[in-house]
Amino acid sequence: MSKKYFTIAGCNHYYGNEYMKKGMKVKLVKEPDNEYDQEAIQVKIKGLGKVGYVANSSYTVKGKSMSAGRLYDKIGKKAKAKIVFILDGSAICEVTYDGLSGK
Image (tube, rainbow, N blue to C red; front, side):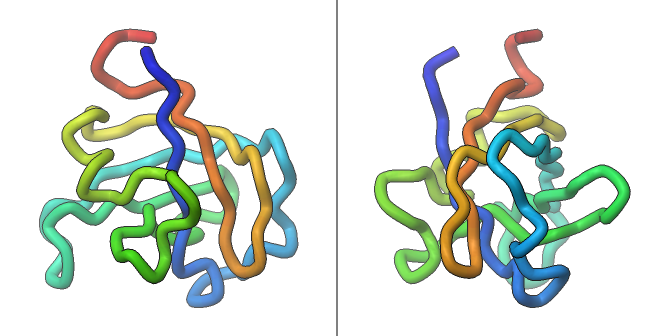
């Protein structure tokens, strides 16, 4: 599996990102019934629930990380990732389990 990075967006609508730490595990869950974005991917943390979404606009995607649209077909219904960088109001994560390849 090649490395895939994405930005968590919308943290300030939930719990913020002050508690996030490098290495924290997150879960990705596709949300195809989302009324605003058919390629929406929720980001969840165990014990908290939804903490944001995979960024999907040029304003929220940081650096060369993937947008939700680019990542959507590269993961299964559920995938796993870990936080690698904490940014102001967001975080960059690396996919560790894509839900497709069994790895």
